[in-house]
Length: 398
Image (tube, rainbow, N blue to C red; front, side, top):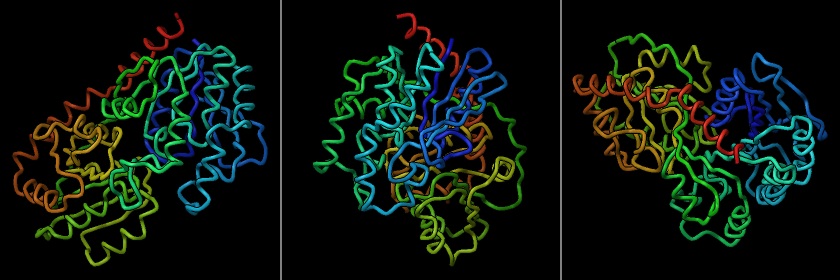
């Protein structure tokens, strides 16, 4: 089967787990299928595409710069006043339409699998439709109903009454009509359906898969090591985690913060008086594995409705119990008291209490860690790819 993956970013250009996931499934599928990838690139002055390879086969990666005010890769660095205009161009970009249509004509895939398309625009669906190629869409976030993708106001409150521009923005995306919509959680499916999206499409929940990784050998260095890995933005709730750790009466506690983002400088200022808190920035896989080996517990403190949280099954692979906020899809991944613990989002006192409890209850911590390893089997990438193939077969057989 010939399958074309469309993703706004693709390694080495990475913002989060979605583009890594697309890379993982593309490489695994390339062992049995002809795979091509169309993606935006933060370089180039025109619409010509550069070609690379997906896997061992002669599979193509098309990279091009969609004409707009700036590349989506640099979105978080741009001032807020210019972003509404950028989004206006990004709703349906004729340049993207022309480039992707030409690439699809060249590849002639049996199916197009669209992932995040912010920065490419919804014209990717039009290009496939006009060529008679069926489309499958995996929803990774809330971009279809929220330009910020967080469903939060500037004050980090739940955005209930959207402003007029956002309502117009949402109405446009109701026109998207893929054959099948896949979401990693029931929460995402229910949220988008509640906004009236994908009324006629078949909707499926399929938790994301992750590649098998050799579990780390755990090291006990005499400290209680707490780990956070992810974006450093306000919606991720890292400020709550820092406040909780600062309030712990534990001299041997250590908080390891891995990641980059718009809130990084402020978080470092908040933690500068506490030597127990260490920031690492971006880490390569080998360095990250070293932190996995010493981590007693990981924390996912998001204050927004997390669509999935790909880092959680990665923690599970290495036998790391997870404390997560009870929001979005996190409760679908963390079974409270089995492989981790849940707390109300933004509740610093509740999070500090759970950390304090685990630091002194090694029996509970060991039980949670053991069950975390068992839970990791649910996210086996090979099983996930087999389910994708079944969906592809069904769509193309129609």
